[in-house]
Image (cartoon, rainbow, N blue to C red; front, side):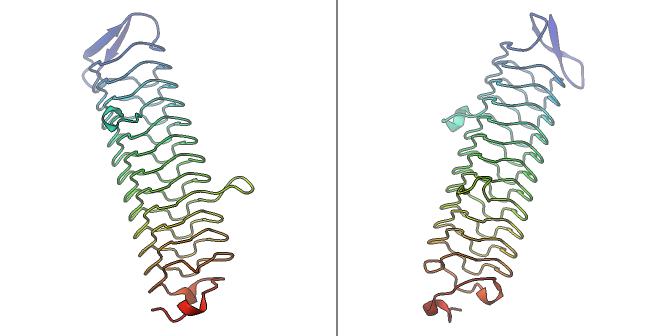
Length: 284
């Protein structure tokens, strides 16, 4: 018999038959504030459970089912959530993670579709190959996340901190990155001929100082009023992109076709290797 207790009061919140929580059926349980530090919850079913304010520090949640779980203000720092299922194609069924602490958690291959993680802390987390389509990370901390090959399609990353993030080969199609911080982020590719996709994304007012966007596909992407100081755009595809009033100081546009780029009020005289079409040279 395993007793799950409240992390502060010691009150018993639930009793589970067996010697381990691995594979346990914990669906619809009231476990708010539970002390589950270091618990082995491998393949456990926590669907629709109340885990608000729970402490799951260093817990093993590999392949656990957390669809519909309430994890607001919970602590999952250092937890292993490899291939865990938190997302759903239906937003009302996705996990709630707003305000939670997932710093340095392992979410490799996790399903976070449509999950709500507003103002959550994912600093240094591993999001490699994670599916975050439609997820809401508004104002979250994703600084220095490792997320190669992750899917952020139509994700809400508005005002999100992605400084120094590894976003190589990611798909950020149609993502909302308004006023996001991506300074020193890596949006290149780990493979010859590969590329990160930013098509139709909105980066208005975003901070991309020193970011790497070599070979990136950013067609019809909005960079209006963005800080692009020192960005490496070498061989990027920017067809239809909007750079109106962007700061392109020291940005490298080697190999970039600028014919269809909207560049009004962006001072390209301070950019590097920018080949400006003759009919655009007098734009102000």
